[in-house]
Amino acid sequence: MLIVRVQPEEGIALRFSVKVPGERYRPRTVSMDFRYGATFGMTVPEAYERLLLDAMRGDQTLFTRRDEVEAAWKIVDSILKVTESPEFPPPNPYPAGTWGPPAAEQLLAQDGRAWRQL
Image (tube, rainbow, N blue to C red):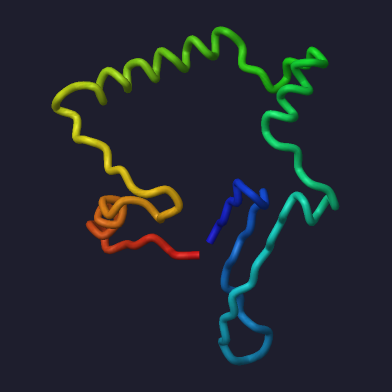
């Protein structure tokens, strides 16, 4: 299982099963866990802190070029046109902080799958 943590503790974890050493087959779940704050002993700057600092310094590394923005909007505009048509199904809203709408569970259930709760 690959877990990507976005906020508040940015990082990534990988959980998988391994065979415990010995003659018998005994699987055990192990975890590799990386957290920015714990690894580097400091808090990670908020996303816009870094961006604003780079803008003040004139560093354009993390900024998107004009042609990239125009290409992205060309794609987004075509998607918006489709979603705004009367034939497009309505969205499935759900309360913030929940695991999502029931339609998400139903979508996976069609293939005999389910979301894994962490």
